[in-house]
Amino acid sequence: MHADFATLGNISIDDLVFIDGSTKWCVPGGNAVYSGLGMAVWDERPAIIAPVGPEYPVADLGERIDLSNCRQLPRTLRNWGLYEEDGSRHFIFRTAMQNWHEFSPALSDLDGFTCGHAHLAPMPWTLQIELAERLRRDGTKLISVDADDRHLREVDQASVKRLLNLLDLFLPSKQDAEAMVPGKSPPDALRVLREIAPELPVIAIKCGDKGLIMHAAGQADYFEIPTVAKTVVDATGAGDAFSGGTLVGLARTGKPLDAVLWGSVSASFAVAGLGPTALVGATKHEAQCRLDHLRTQVDAHRL
Image (cartoon, rainbow, N blue to C red; front, top):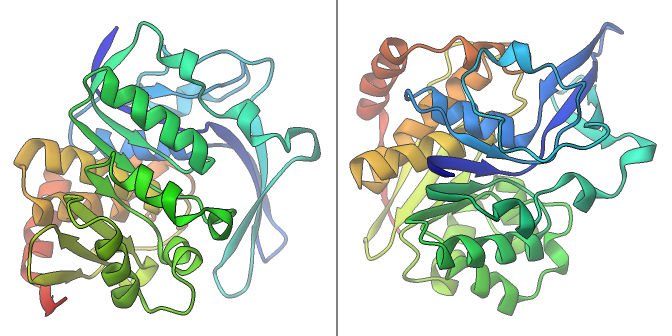
C-alpha cells in the first residue's frame, strides 16, 4: 500500500482526572492520532502506523484518519492523564503497560507500505532513527520528527546528528530542547541545534502558549510565531497536531515559514476541545481564516 501522508507513533486511551475531582474515561488519544488529525485539518486522510487494540473508540474520530494499517494488539496502550492547578498535565502509563516499545511501531510494520511524507511522533530515539532510515530507503520525500523528552539527556551527540541528518523537519518542544541543550533559552537552543545540523531544512521549537520559533537552513533570521488559538480547553495533543499540520504545509507549499503557520493552525484546533473533539470537527474554511490572521503576526529576529 502507498499513502501520500503517514504518521508513525503511539495510539492510546486516556483516562483523565481533573483538578476539581471530575473524570473522563476512555478519551481517544495517542501522538499518532493527534498528528494525523493535524494533517486532516488540511483535507488529508493520513495513514496511521501504530499498534492498537480492539477497544479503541475509533468511531469518535469521524473517519478523518486511516487506521487500516495499524497492527492489532490484544489491548490498547492506556494512560492516566492527571491535571494540575497550574494547567500542566502528567500522562502515566498504566502499570501493565510500561514497555513502551510494545506499543510503538516496528520496522516490520512498514513491510508492504510506502508513503510520500511521514511524521515520526515521540518514541524512543533509536527507534526513530531506524524508522527514518527505512523510510528514506523506501523513497519517502519528507520526514518530520517530534522528539520525546523522557530520555533525551541520555542520547549522545553522534546519535542526535545521525537522526537530524535524515530529516526535513525537526520539531521538538521547549521541554525537548531543554533536555537536549540544558540551561539554554529556546533561541539559544535553536542556535545550537542549527550548528549540529546546518543543512536540516526546518527546525522549529514549540513553546506552548508562547507559540513557536523557527529557522530555515541558510537564513540569517529566525521567526517567532504566536499562538492563534482562540480558546484553550485542553492542551493535550497540540504539539502533535502542530507537527502533522507543518508536514502537510511544507509538502504543499515548499515554504518553511508557511509550513509552521499551517502547523500552528492545526494546534489551535487541538487545544479548543477536550481530547481530539475540536480537531475532528475542524473545517478547512475556519483553518484558512486562522491562517490568514496568523500571517500578520510573524516577527523576525537575527539568529
